[in-house]
Every structure is written in C-alpha cells, then in structure tokens.
Image (cartoon, rainbow, N blue to C red; front, side, top):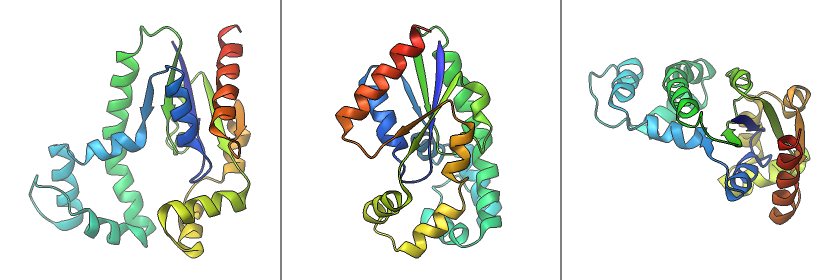
Length: 194
C-alpha cells in the first residue's frame, strides 16, 4: 500500500484532485466527510455540548450556534478543532488498518494534512495549487461569501506556498478535469513504476 496525501488551501482544487483519484479506482479517505460523521457520534456530541453550551446531552449539536461561536473567535475554533482531531485520528488509523492489504494507492484528502502532521502517514504528498485570484473567485462563487470573508478563512490556513515547500508534487488545478485526471494517472503510473 502506498499512501498519498492530497492537500491544498481552500479553493485550490484539492477535492477535485481527490475525485479524479477516486475515478481512477483508488480508495479515498475524505476528511470533510469524516468531520460530518463525527457530528453523529454520541460521545463527540456530548463533549461539544458540554464544552460549548454547558449541556449534558447527546442530542444533536446546534451547528448554527456553534458556527457563530467559532467563526469570529480563533481561540474557540482551536478549542473545537482540539475536540475533533482525536476522533478523526482514530478514524484515520482504522482506515489505514482497513486498507493495509490494498495493493496500490490509498488517498488521504485533507486540507489540514500538514497542520495535523498527518503527512507522517503518507509516502507522498500532492498539493493542489492555483493562482490566488482564481482561488478567491472559486471560493466566493462556491460558498456565496464576500472577499472579506474569504480573506478571514484563508488567513486561518497554512499558506499554500508553505504547503508547496513541504510537498512531493504540485498540481496546478486551473485545467479541465479530464486533463487533471490524465496528469494524476501519469503521476501514479510513474510512482508505481518507481
């Protein structure tokens, strides 16, 4: 099994690259999907309700109220992330164990790959990259947010330029999806053949 991490800042095309890897037949561990599933875990729900709302309940977290607490308060966001990360770490270990006998590539799709130090599980890391103005336009259109909101979100992440320095490969995602798929297929073929 060869573990490949795919990462990149918001709007840089990480998810598109991961979808193309999945279309090539590789198992993909999607951190965003796992974050959503964590919010259905009763232990996590109880923990969040206790820490943020002073409630002893395993009923669903009020995501709107939680979002308003953490969106403009970096310390609260960090507190939430510190609660989520151990749950995600367990899921990642299970995923790696489950796919250990897999021949070929296994993909970890994680925006915070370097921030969580999960690159240590990877044999290779690919960073999705795109020009800053393209990134900004993508996020504003996709998420229906202002330029100011984009800047706030982007400022909270490790700059893509820093991720590129830590990467094994960089793929410019400002291309049609069929070209990205072909680029990934070629890269995986080269890695497989050593």
